[in-house]
Image (cartoon, rainbow, N blue to C red; front, side, top):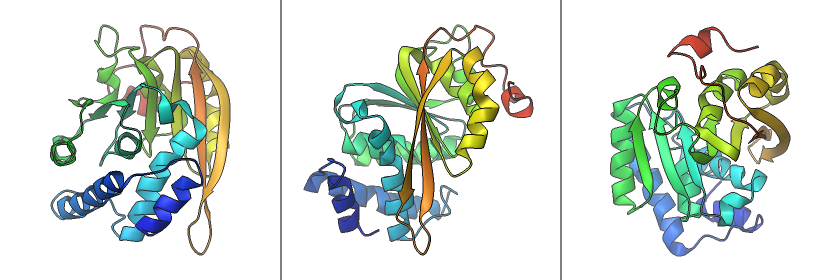
Length: 243
């Protein structure tokens, strides 16, 4: 996907990027590739692939949850790595207030430089393990309109990381590939324990060659408070997923 194809594909979804926004995505690409030589941020480095599999893929969240396009929502991105999906969402929809959580300082240093160079405001970086970020008593617990995670963990584990950050009435938006249905079934009990309720899955295809890649965007409504014992201590959710 070339930058022009990226712009055209988004226009078909009602997302019309300005020249300034396109320049910001170009800067993002250049800085990602430069930093990736020192810090392992991504295996995807070809420009066409970055625009498709990182930038466009990140923005599919707004196809599934339209309020991201227009509302002044607070969004937390758990384990964002090189900033996906939250920073592409911020570039396309500047009204969003973003908080990025990651456990590795090297990645946060890259993001700090990127955010500065792109002149972004309302983007906060937090150095923390996902389990510690929103534990009982944390200032971040149940504070966000939207929580998201992409390529972080299985759905049952990701739900424990994310649902404790979302306020009642908010949404947990999970980015998943082809195995989403199986993961969702495994996570059903965990989602209910954590105060969530499955809303829907939006399935689409990335126009990859030679075979299109399936993507699933799973929306979980936050319908009640997350019990105070969740998330459990660091390492436990991944070792002993909730059932």
